[in-house]
Image 1 (cartoon, one colour):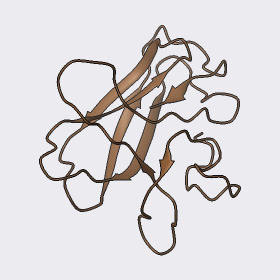
Image 2: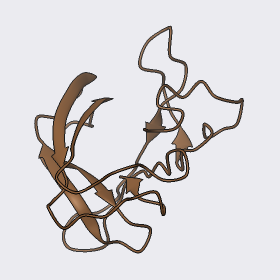
Image 3: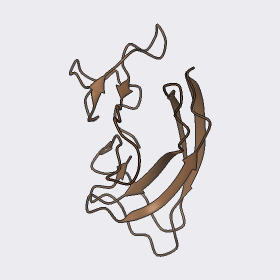
Length: 128
């Protein structure tokens, strides 16, 4: 459901369907990655990456989605990483957090489950 999930579609920089700057590769087989740089802490707007999928990310009421990604953080970062499915207007339909980011790249997995009142998300939901 995530468009260009392995970041090999097209030669654009940043990779097609993603919206952040290119960073170091995860490994020799994957030469592209996204990097977020946060220069302060405390309250404020969130920082993230969004993927529009293929005409949105399909989702229906009470649907479970498995999410897997690789991530790392600079020394001293202790916050969680939150994954959501949300509308382009910002309505959150599913959310999950993972913790344990550190200096080395690590694979994270989590599950997102939409609520019983969710609607078809083909109108442009995002994963961020």
